[in-house]
Length: 473
Image (cartoon, rainbow, N blue to C red; front, side, top):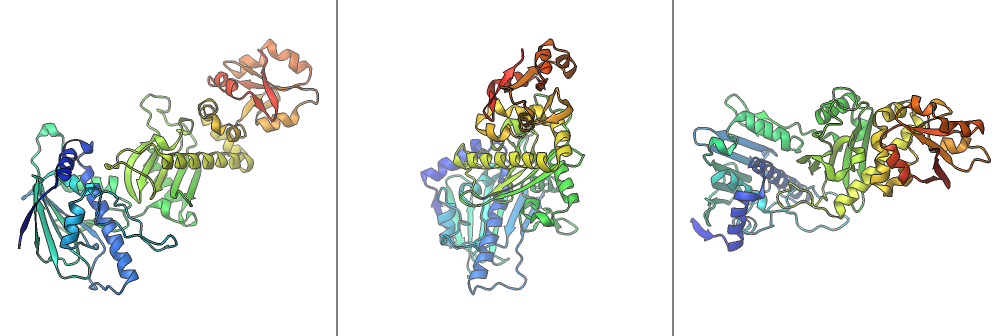
């Protein structure tokens, strides 16, 4: 029997917000619904593993997209845990609740699945593109299905109807008619669906299949390279992924594969380029890391995760702990973001130091390209001064080779009071400077600083190993 219910005032406000202003791009709805479907499959697999619940042998852990141009509908279905009628009313009818949310676990639980679903509002993103939504679901372990329908007009209906596919959930979107001025894509178009899955959900762990006239086509690679053990990733895979991230068709100079565990867990796969991109000094140069939450793409060029003096680093960060606002489109400025950023900077600077120690020629090549950028970190981020000063390279009067501050101090004369330096526009200019004559006559060494940022740097780096830096000019 079909029952009609009214949304409460909060849900009505949420729907209005969702349709008009919460998401900047309407295409986000597909990411949200696929994420919910992935969560539902995670939960079902966990329940099957931890209980006596059994499924038919033909049950498929997959997500299916079925577009229909004739009826202007898009169906998203999954072989996940499903919901009972009461759960549909609870989870679909309550703000900030999600049917994919897991129960509480003991702290020592190690087998629980990773879940994306944090906000019930993701489901309501459907109404940005649909003027009617039908949800048909059947919970694992039952034979009863629940059919939920709403036009987003303040009411919804729910009835008990078995789901033809059995366990899982299907959502049918009756798509709105948009005008050309709305600039909304056709979500029944196969190419549009393929591109959106590639953009947002390529690394979801389950097959996302598109029903076509010829055969079902799997759209996602399911290969989140950063989640593989480092020893199992080939150089060719790194090269291909680096090309995908950076659009730089050379090989990455260095790979940093890092997993942080403990109070803040995340995985990062970072690449150092060997050359500056052609547009490196242009105003429209985009930098930052690609951000994922449990394999789901959130944003490109996330500048919150790295300081600007590391803007040449490319890569991805995938976190299960990161706090996002309800649209998942903007990071909240909280301690989690700060902690990820801090960990990444420490890891990258440690990698610089290791390269300097063990791969000096490669590091000097890298420094030739990005040294001036790295030096910006001294005035910009003084909290990293102790680690930064150890990886700086300079030219000096000692010869044509690069030197570190540590090496310079090791060559200082017994009577030398400070670390001498001279700034200028070019090496040729400073080498001819009369300011050098006095120190050279005494057999002292001077650093030759010719980058525009150096004047700024020497105001921040005033001492090293208790030796003052002294300008000869």
